[in-house]
Figure 1: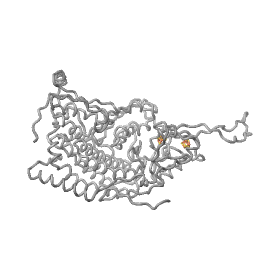
Figure 2 (figure 1 turned 120 degrees about the horizontal axis):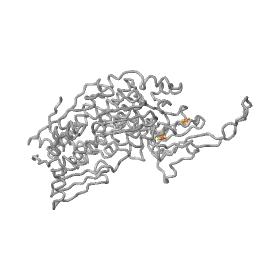
Figure 3 (figure 1 turned 90 degrees about the horizontal axis):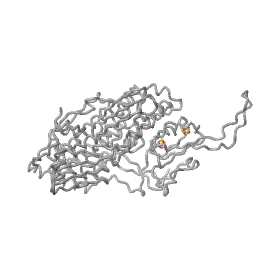
Figure 4 (figure 1 turned 120 degrees about the vertical axis):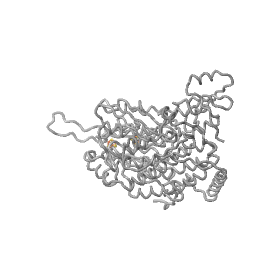
Length: 185
Length: 406
Ligand code: SF4
Ligand code: SF4
């Protein structure tokens, strides 16, 4: 049981309340606590594990389709891509020598549907997705949301890559403080 | 200036007769973002007095329940977060607990503690948002800006842990997806101390402000008896003097291990609904501190699951604390049966009901959200008040349309 007491009003308390409120307002007028950033002139440097756009590393992918199965928003489509050179038929004991697969399956993400949950990144048995912290992207046309397979092999370019990068630091007085980061890496 | 407000009887028959009367004006508030989201409030007024209010909900229905029926169990995790975007951890936790009960798993203690820590951070954010909404409803953009900005340090904390700002999808059956970073406890302490200091200024500018007191004391009263009868939940129920909190009454995760109080107020008016959120933030801070102090060592995912990981997955977990999904997790098919779970979300009790027919998708999933259960404030508390009291009552109950509409 922890019944709290509601503060009751008195004439004195009322005057004091008004003065307190105004004084506190004035305190912040003189010394404002700003948490906003002047984007895109300044942009936040996000932590390494930020769930941003990612790309596929073709050599690592084994085409298992697990990422497609687990994607909650069905943003992943498995593409059937022709394999350049077909391996030589095996001269084995099997009667009809089967040629190697003519197609390989590779995932492509529709960025318009992706919710960046990273289920696909976490489910991939070979770590074939390379994550990045790029997140601030916009497109002119709806079709641009769907990269081609080649487009999905490289990371998109961040529009704020030339902005001044700042790092958000927790601060006891200001909540969040932005510290400048050494210009470029 | 607080005067006794005559309450209109709680029957629709009486109220619908009023509709026929001459001189009654029908007002439509909304549906385009009438406050904290898209909803329409139909209000009938006689002069300046509200005689009937009908909240028209459903504008932001997401269909979480139905959509989950043709998806794998794990795919519903990001979906249950969507209705209550300022309180995603608690929404996620409730679903996963129901699923774990179906599967019969028990996550390791470290995972339970991490769940409590993130859930309490989420509660602080949700209450700050509630205070912000209350502020803007009463015309104070200062408090709105302050409270929304003060969520930022906490968003930053969870962003560092999970890599996302709002929709963390952090809790999975059997544990959590990421272990706490090394310096997490220190950072949390900085954020908590910041908010503690800041709360003193909130008290001066907003909570003890005579204007706020005059505007909200005695407005929107709901007695303990009526609150229980109407089934309202969460901080609003406790502001009416009913000591009920799922964390205490039906402990889940690691809540039984912690020492905390359930603040209650007798008045049940809008002002005490503001105060209760402030008090609960203090309690949440104490829970977070206790949990970080006593954080057990060990894995964040249950042992059997870890054993089934491939060598590459184990290596990643040991190095970075990131849990990779195994095939087992993606193709969960719980045995036939049903399970319920309740969690105390930022706005009140969230209820989950899962039915499995042995397949890979839920047979039925039911989600009852606190905002929906707080709707009686519109129908039963607002009538009898002045028209200008509608925003005050609406703001004080921290109603969030997407959460009510699911
Ligand atoms: S991040 Fe999530 S939504 Fe996006 S492609 Fe991967 S699994 Fe699908
Ligand atoms: S990206 Fe990974 S999960 Fe997706 S098909 Fe390739 S190997 Fe499988």
